[in-house]
Length: 83
Image (cartoon, rainbow, N blue to C red; front, side, top):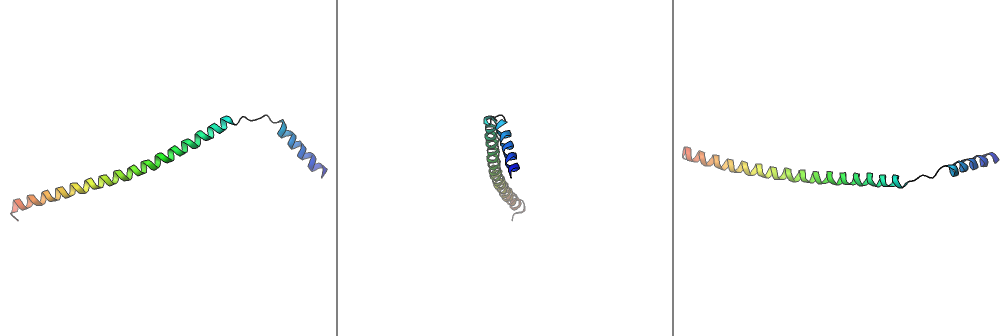
């Protein structure tokens, strides 16, 4: 038992002898990293939402063009063949 305590005291002495670590830069870097990560996540979500909106608008425009062309072709067929 006495040896275990002696080893523990040696470990504590090593910790006390270690130079203090300046964590302010590490903390700033961690904040910067997580802030950037959050901004990337927000931008990705926004881009996905905009992609969905672009798809819906493109689909609506294509459907409108299809209807207009179909009606135009039908009117020309009626005029040409007298239907």
